[in-house]
Image (cartoon, rainbow, N blue to C red; front, side):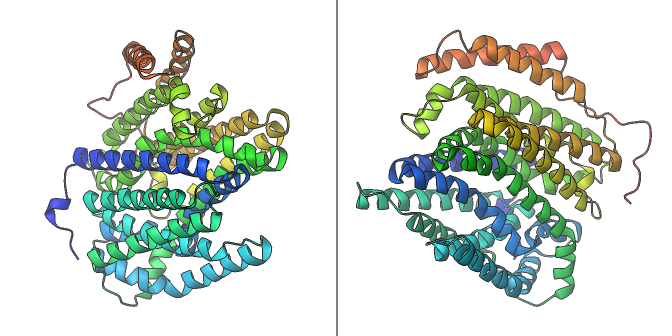
Length: 478
């Protein structure tokens, strides 16, 4: 089904809708975390903090990466969206159902989870809604995408709050928590399928093409999911699940940057990348502008969250005391993830996607080594430092591999200097006045905004009108 014209718009409009919708989703997720912080026991909250981030990687796993290929088949191959989605959903049903059975068997017999059914419902629903969200954004249908994203989180929050009011003061069980999440994504995913009206048909050639393109990206996503959990697993082993729960609250605060920047950018960038790679300069001007904009915005928003931590974190979990070092490292990890997307141009080309997995493997190795050394000694601070170490490696190796395929002269030195000066400015501003209420937060953020503007001007770091090309021509993909 072609997407109606009213769902299409300019790049600025699309980014604005992505940003607003993910921002609203972030607020709703923080509200969900607040409800769960009060509704679960400390031990169950720690288990939830370990299990909840695995839902999306598992959903991607049972799809074998075909969701990643929707953008490619619709944008690069020029197929109608309803045909692409119908063929891929039909072809993946047998393999996806077998994967769900395998996940259920492992959860039941290896981990003895009492809420295996809720886990399967959630993973299956997440897979369906992930496919539909990718389908909408592949054609720039930002409005239905936003409705799906905000709607699922709003419905989940309403169910959590209603259940909490019904059962208080008895704590909620993890089974009910994941059952409600699964029900939300299944219902809204089916509504999205009805709205898109895909054409079910068996097209094994399209399915093989989708797996060939998307499976390496799936492996990358899954490996990154492991990397994202490594610090928590080490922390759970050495400090217990209660410490993991407290640590996850710092990650939730850092996720404000992810929801405001990384996720909207990750949604918007892949289709735009396919469009601009055909520019006369192979999109170098566009890619450089994009990377500079991401760096500027990430540094600024991360500083805002860090300086306002004593105000923000108690909003998520009343009574929690923020750790400046832990939050700083978590924010640094999110920023590294954003920059790895911005610097990655060459590895999204057909035939190059497998190299993304290698980049992520290097990051996993760095995280594991750092966590093994630091967590036993420093606890949460060590876990946060290992996350930052993995993020730094991810940025470095992704930029290097992408440069070999598509050499773009990003201003790496000036971007790095910008972050160094931003960190120094934040350290100077932080002790001036405690940011624990709205007035102090406002004052300190004004100081921060002025400082960041001055640093950008001094370094000459701005979004240029022209891109910078290297003298040599880009090599053909090998």
